[in-house]
Length: 222
Image (tube, rainbow, N blue to C red):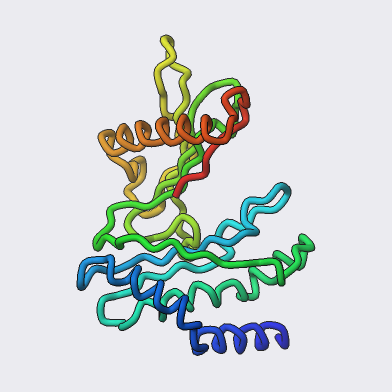
C-alpha cells in the first residue's frame, strides 16, 4: 500500500511537471501536424518491453488525446507517467530490470472514431513452427486486446499454410466474448487485407534485420 501510494504521487508529479522548452516545442510541432479537431492516439512504448525472458506487453498505458483537451503534451505526460504504475514497477522488480534504465517513448497517430476492431498479431505460427502462418488476436471496437476490460475475451486464431496446395486455413482457438457465438470480429475481406499487410511487413523487416535464414523471426504488430 505504501509503494502504491508513492507511485501514484510520482505519476501525479510527472503529469503536472513542466516540460523542457525544446521538448515542448517538438511536441507542439507534432500536434500541429495533425488536422484541427482530429483525435490523436498516444501509444506507450518503452525500452524494456519484449526483452529476452521478459515481456512487458500491457504494462503501460496509452491515451487518446481529444480535440477539447488542449495541448498534446497533457496526454503525452500521462503516457510518460504510466512508466510508474504499480504493475509495471512490480514486473520490473521481479525480473530485476533496473528501473532507472527504463525510458518511455510515445507514438502519436490519428485516432479513428467508431473503430470496428483492434488487435495484436505475430507474423509466425507460434503453436506449430513447422507450418508458415500468423497468430492473431482481434477484438471489437475499442475493447482493447492489450488491456482488456474485465471478462472480455478476443478472437484468438491461427492462419496457417496447411491447405492441400499450401493455401492459408484458419484455426480458431476461441471467439470474442463481444460477438454472438461463432461470429468472427474480422470479415473475410478485412482478414485478407490484414494478411497481405503482415506478409509485406514480415518480408521487409526480415531483410532489414538480416534474418532471411532465421525460421523463428517474427514481427509483433498492433
